[in-house]
Image (cartoon, helix red, strand yellow):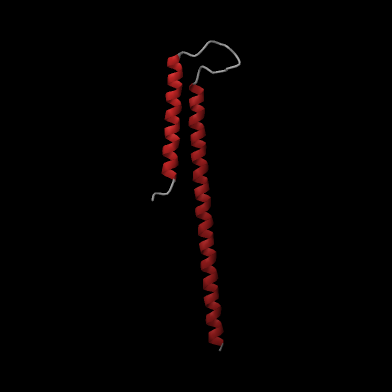
Length: 98
């Protein structure tokens, strides 16, 4: 009878260790994924801020400091479209492949 109790105890300990190990691994994977997402967010924000720094003309509809030329507007639209495409590609790369 003592052997049976000892075996049950060992099996229970083994199962508890496996569950704790799996939980620890899941938590570690989750934190790494969160860190990766945070890094990606910071990189996107940095890229957007660099785009804003290169924007030497601001558009202020309340203040008439001279209208932007049509070619300037087209350039701005093109830059925005490129930024949108970059973000879309990044999001597609993050989504699981089917």
